[in-house]
Amino acid sequence: MPETTTQGGRTTFENFGRKVDAQFGKVGPRIEDEVKRVIAYLNDQVVPQVRQNSSSALRCAAEQLGRLAEHLDQRRNDVRSGSSERPAGEKPSAS
Image (cartoon, rainbow, N blue to C red; front, side, top):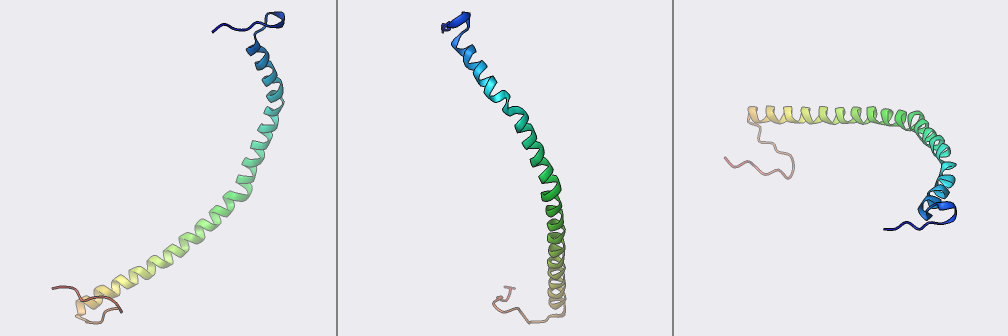
């Protein structure tokens, strides 16, 4: 594909590249500053909230797991003692 030559022996593509560099070259430092601000915001605001909420979620899950363990223990004890009580809606097991 032949390159189109314009003023001073430069190609159209070279001129376009220079214009793009001139426009976006000014934006680079600003983008870097914005990225730094976003990182600072994430580190200062988001991460602490996630950590706090994560620990709360773990405590809640631990409570639920504790209740489940108690329920399973109770069921195991009921089966061993031959208790015929079943929670509402549960069908008897086929033996």
